[in-house]
Image (cartoon, rainbow, N blue to C red; front, side, top):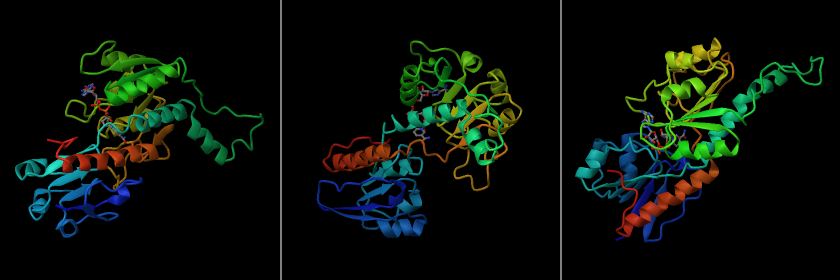
Length: 313
Ligand SMILES: NC(=O)c1ccc[n+]([C@@H]2O[C@H](COP(=O)([O-])OP(=O)(O)OC[C@H]3O[C@@H](n4cnc5c(N)ncnc54)[C@H](O)[C@@H]3O)[C@@H](O)[C@H]2O)c1
């Protein structure tokens, strides 16, 4: 049987997507949004590749030929997995591709914030250096990374990967997790003793708003907070207030509660000092996207060979 493969949101992956090693037809679209478009484009497909295109029961009902949904991401919340299970559609996803890209984004944010890098860039652009009486000017504190203490909340794959890099930079690492493992400290110790706290837990009812006004007050006034995990782990209004009144010294966020923040967000505010917000791109280095793309095709080939891998239940 010749498989018909259709990639519905090709522009979400900026990498080479190799052709699978079995007889097939292949079609790709930059993006696909409406249920009508999805059904029209997938009507003859046996294999659908998607990143964020919603695959709900109403849509899937109209696609009886579909055998495999290969998700080009880790999160599969856009797919109605219960429907797929009942109707023999296999769902596969991408795993463990972000082991360099997320840790490097975290380290980049830590360096930028500890050195007040963006604030200096802004001051220079605004002419502060031109007017300076000295060869340099010191409007903001600059702190070393070496010798500082990094609290890692969620000591899983990414937490550990950051821990290794942090130790190589001469940082003291304090890990915290709910899963017992050697060397962990408690959450209160993380809050009180860290110069930098970085979050790497999933968003669950237990972790939602795990950092709010109370926790921010327990942190050092010189501390910075990094969130590249999920929006909703930190109370955004409490953080905006804490940065403005100096309760903590800086924050680096790659994730917000609503993405994209079409209605705005309290953290997208030029007047908040030493805050860096990036648009959920920690995952997206060129190298990581190529790993992701290669694994996507590996998953499809494994399925067609009768040995499915990375199956999502
Ligand atoms: N910004 C991005 O582009 C990007 C990219 C990849 C992953 N992520 C996010 O990073 C996060 C971590 O990913 P990972 O691959 O390391 O996951 P992981 O599953 O390997 O690690 C998560 C850890 O959190 C721990 N944990 C769960 N609930 C906890 C709680 N209440 N308190 C303390 N620890 C708790 C788990 O025991 C586990 O060790 C995820 O939320 C993921 O979605 C973001």
